[in-house]
Length: 233
View 1 (spheres, rainbow, N blue to C red):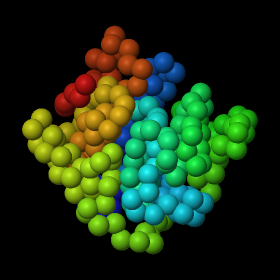
View 2: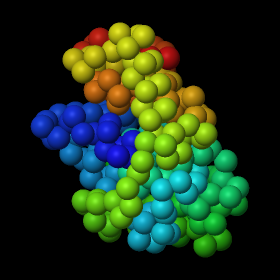
View 3: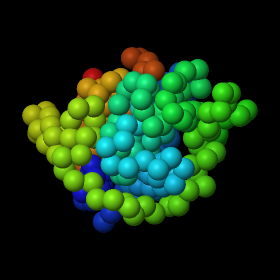
């Protein structure tokens, strides 16, 4: 079973429950994703990767994106179809990058990071693709074409089972449980950042309030408004 299925499997009983709330203090934006919306974006991404790029379990998909609500859909979608998420674009089947980044992957998907979910204002250069414009047309439900065994590489050199075990272990060490609401300023930079900033909260089943470009003066207000019970970062 894929990493995404194992992370989301306990959650469908509460599809309307908020799962990810993303603040960008530089833009003054707030976006909240429910369990259902998160799963929907993950399914669209997985379908797009399989249908357009023939991604199969173990194929490398590079993700060079900041901590953002759109990054959640990219990562969960990649893992759902069994991809191995890496942070270097060279040799990757597909690379997801920001509008100001370059890629030497076989294919490049540019992620707009627009807070309202709009695609790019202009088509990306060099044959790259507009992720939001393309993936939103893909199916809302995903059924894997191939099984994703636990020994399939999922994040860097770590397998599905290893990533899940490590995420749960780290969540337990800091005392996170499904009743928590966690405010995080962790940057999802590299495999450790993805693990600590996203996978640990997801493995614990918490509501993650992710603050990007955090303004320290506003964090107390964020905690109060979101009624968070724990901090990461």
